[in-house]
Length: 55
Image 1 (cartoon, one colour):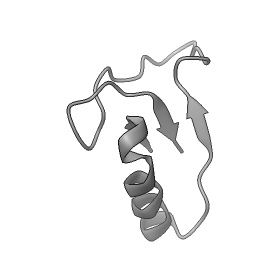
Image 2 (tube, one colour):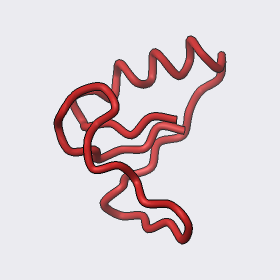
Image 3 (cartoon, one colour):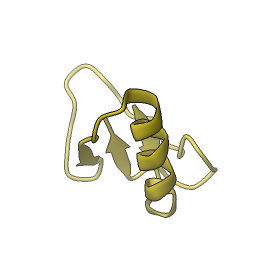
Image 4 (spheres, rainbow, N blue to C red):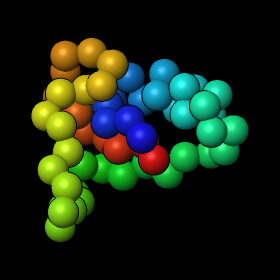
């Protein structure tokens, strides 16, 4: 699972497929609320704001 900015989506997708050998789902963090989890504020791959969950 990766929380990334829009600029890092492609890299996160590649890493996910390499690691899990399956296509991920993408969730817009601005449009989704989670009951028991708060997404990180920063991208996992850079210092930008996290906008998308790749899972």
